[in-house]
Length: 189
Image (cartoon, rainbow, N blue to C red; front, top):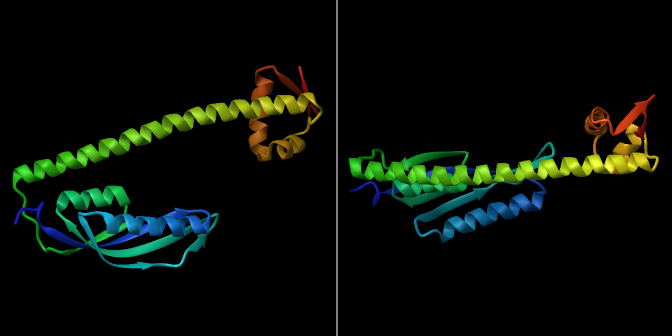
């Protein structure tokens, strides 16, 4: 039997971290439903843990057993659902012809390139948002100082930004020559 027609039985652990608790519970159910709807996957059973608080986020685990049609779909499952781990239950061995293995590697590379493209796009968007957020905070600090909110603690409360982070912004504004500091009080230059 060719490896792309061979059915592969696996056990996989899906872990989702996030907040709030309801979100990760819903996302887990969404993943399970998506797996059920995939024509290349057959969900045999599922066991979903209770969400547990992990500091500021929640975590939930789903242990699933799935039959997958072919090695390419197994790799696709791993990339699409990012399981924490998988265990191949059946078959015990795989046999590949070079044509099948070449197609498998090329499919893997195509999926990795797609993931890389998305990561780069998100990185670019993140940098754009950071730059604009920093500009907004600096302008906010300038306006606050101009209207008499001129101590680090009060600037922090007014902006909702932690005091140590605000210090970085006021230091930058001092360096740029836009504000000055005398005995813990800031003023516009």
